[in-house]
Length: 145
Image (tube, rainbow, N blue to C red; front, side):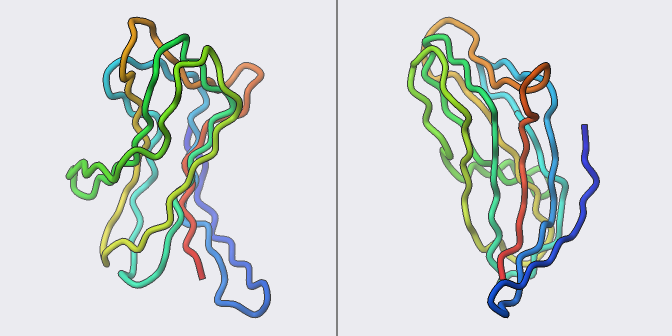
């Protein structure tokens, strides 16, 4: 489910403000073994000088004994650039809510980000839970003052 983008500007302390650039929800549970896309932002245009925060939230991580990684990837023009592991999840049965973020300064031009999940070892099927009693997962892009 796609939530329409709304640009919000806050100017605490007289600063230049923070803008919500994009917000996309994933409303159903995602199971994974090999690399699987969890949620993808919409494309946006960066100015090449501003900082942006990319944030991911999931209400419940159920690994079922399978260590897993979440990666942040950038996909301008399908480049699929791996920006690294944003969360390395242990092999516990379940974990509480997870919120992770990264602040970066993208080059000027079009950018799109996505979160992928990969089972590192084990033979089960881990999952990132959303919907039916759980809040949706989301990826959010904020332009920082």
